[in-house]
Length: 388
Image 1 (cartoon, rainbow, N blue to C red):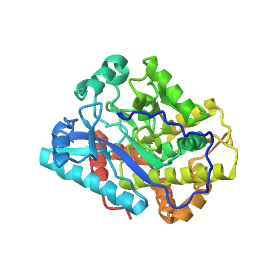
Image 2: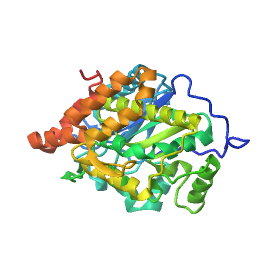
Image 3: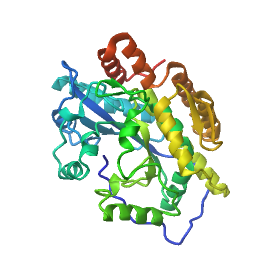
């Protein structure tokens, strides 16, 4: 639940010049975690943990809507190595402080044994307003996500990028899916978080936008009609950054491992780079119908990497591995230029071999029930060394 506020500062003078991409794009990641009691493994109050990690004035951590959740934020990173180190530092700080407070952190889209009826809201005026305005939707909002920011300075250009990356969002979701359980039950979904998220009236795939002024106008209408509490509560799956001059990817479940967070960031940055190259060359944006995008996202949430997914550009069902390879082919140039090809392809193929977090959770459930899932999630969340 971002507290960002959108600024209505479209670039003056109409369409700006579009020079080719030069050098790496900046990126940053926001990770949301569940905080659980170290003994009972039930959701715990994140307040003491937040006080501990912020006692030195750190702005890398913030409260979330529900009391048992906490968010961490990396700084601005220019390479995957820097990003990985920052993600590791943020998690290590939380891990150390959690041990001090008798808690543990869990990175997953949903927390398998959690019951939304037993977890309160964080006491903040904005969160109080959201809880009252949205009633049961807010009450059941016990989910965690991973957001990736990629730097795009020009606001109109960021809107063009948003229009172009939408067909690739479902495969990003499939790779990150980490929420197959809800209130102790098997849901049949790889990302049940997505179905919870979709119920908000301002969530989902963004519309096709003509300019940043158009974006600001649409956001203003949502806020003005009371649909959104503020501009930061326009929960599109990708959007122009509200506080920063970025393109913000919001499609992913909370990434259980650092490897999975790095994969999301690397692919997101490469997608933005590819879009900027296409814009500089004057290439037309792909045309994809809203209903196909919606169907593709639903199928990714339902099946993750286990079944066929919809390629929105080709409008066909293909094996998940085929769609992952099509994404890698699409961003091969940016990945090669940034020196990220080997790492990102290794992480992507590793996900196809081992499964996403949802797949691994299901295997743990088959072996040890919900307790086995929880223990595996805590282990994977707190293992900050890269997987070999």
